[in-house]
Amino acid sequence: MIEPNLSLQSRAAGDGRGAGWWWWARPRGVGLSLLLLPLIAALAAIPAAAQEPERSEPEKKPTVLVIPPANRARPPEIRTPDQFVLQGGLDQTRRRRGYEEASDLMAGYQSVLTLLSAGPREDALEALYAFETAAMEGREPAEIDRLFQAEVDVIRALGRRDVESLVPVLVLHHDAYPMYVGRGRPFLSSHASRLAASLADLYAREGASQGSRVLGARALASLGIYAQQTGVKLQGLGLMLHALDFDPTNEAALLGIATVHERSANYHRAAERLLELLKVYPQHREGRLRMAVNLGRIDEARQARELFEELVAEPTRDWVGVLAHQELARIHKEAGRLDRAEQVLWEGLERFPEDGSLRTQLAFVLDHQREPKRSQSVIQELAQTERGAAGPSPRRLYGLGPQQAYRDVLAGLEQSAVARMPRLARLVNASIGDRPAGP
Image (cartoon, rainbow, N blue to C red; front, top):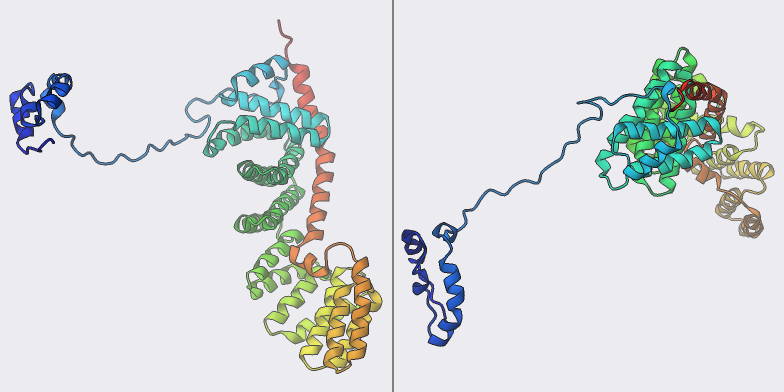
């Protein structure tokens, strides 16, 4: 057994060579000493300084790499649309060496835009997916700023030539957002949303007409509504509020913001946004329905009832009418007017015989009126109605938010992109035609 000796360190340090220190820690027993002689001799040759105990040093913090903004120190050559390089040889070289340089990223993105101007957007979307995933392969998520900056450089070059050519590009990245969400690529979906929002902002500010601001606001509102649907609530709210900066009358944004407040139980603020909407669109059916629902939640039952009565009196057959009948009947029932509630529900079933929720509510009212046989009869009819029902219920549609306004925005963006695609194609084709012939 080796006995510790507290004076071992000072003796070894004073010797200068460390020789003789092993004597103080010599093992008891000759046989074991002989076995350890080679090891002891090797240790004796170590300088005394190496025998000193290690000094404790403060723990080093992990190195944090700060990625500088692309093109800050030495801006690469920016290829404008007149300098598009589309040769297959360059593409092959880029695939071999990766997207290490900003110029490689810009050239790869330009190829995507060329495909966008020449064919279906679905092909360009697939090319964009292949390009951006390859550009981020093996890189940290924080490095996505390299990709963003390179694409923005190309976009700004296009905008300097013709700002209207940016609309098809805007819609491309707008559509890439749900594509990346559906394919489980969260960082690229955030990148697509950020780039589309930046494009919408750029186009709204740089466009020559009020129509540019309206179109930019529509794109921002659409991005915000989709973000809300996917659970990114704060980002969605911010995008819709930004849409109102360019177009305070934007229908989708006003409805979407009101829906956010309603889901947060902030019914007063929801009603304020809906009032802004109804000042611009006084006959907006979904807006009036949501206003009535929120008024009822802030103890404005009389105003809520009047709005519901207006909606049920209109001949339109839609999910708004179904919910208006249900809510009006509920108000009458809570006020003790069971006969009036029954009348409203029968009128609703005459207009919407396929809706099972009206029958369920009617059976409930009849049961409260102590008419179990009639209630049971309605329930039996309900089973046949539910077998023929298809699609989401009116309550489900209400909870989803402004779906019709969202679809209208998507259709408008599609039309705008198609109308301006020739302008993007002219820039691309002119750049190819002007390119000098190779050796």
